[in-house]
Image (cartoon, rainbow, N blue to C red):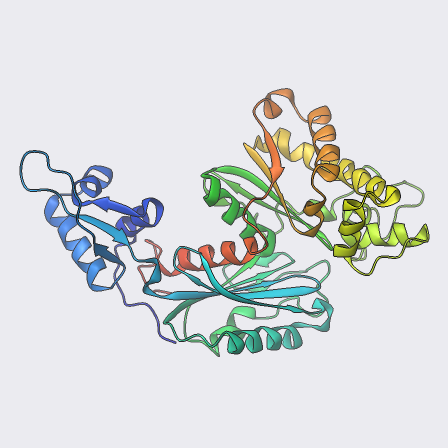
Length: 383
């Protein structure tokens, strides 16, 4: 595994990553750079194998302007999407497109060494022969992004302060990015629809949320921005709030997380083997399961209504296993958001299900990793 060659022309490269292909003239118009400067940068990017000439440029009366395309296949990035009960490791091209992937059941409470050993084993199983330029790792907890560490995670016992980036860096000599899993999903969703103002909800065993505004992830000063799953739920009884996995009482997740819904159904004598089993019961129209998910939607709608009023997103996107219950969940969320958020903030708000598929987390992590290694600020290849 080798690092990407140095070519500090990320400003021009970013245009190709965004638009796939451009003519020499278009690059000059978009950047305001001179022809000689553009020629130099295009030559450097072509020499690095990051763009290639494809011809077909339009003529303005003289010699046709050459067209160039981004080479997403120049190298790959590894993306490891770690959840509470499962992980998916994918190898992706530089545009974030998953090429191959492996999924495994895990228990995040086993701690970092055991879980990351599973990640390494999955990478070995993928038998990657391409040049690897970066690694993106997603975890279900707050992340100190610059250091690549989990910080005071609500559900990741034993992970607090663990040097995840260093663990991977000791095995693969490439830049390693550690990101909250919901943030990574938000990046994938925002890029897919071209939205600069988006909230992504990851709804499965737990409840996660990611915020992308003005084209950037909103992490907060300690990586805890947007963590609605562990805020106080309006459904919490002040005298007898339900306990959450994080150790607190009355959290949104304790009423709307997949594990909490399974608990509630179990108390009614309705056994579910997993969150996926719960979803299947909803699809079959099992009354108690439908009612539980609809209630969860209202709890989630209450939780994010304040975010909608304050941040005024254009889109809220739902992904994860619970999102597979579709309108049963969506109806409750929409009901409470439109009831409780500011009217102006909901006037053009779209609340919908993700259309990316089960690898949305892998795709988002690959994009975050590619952003790092191809960034203008760092120069291509800098860590």
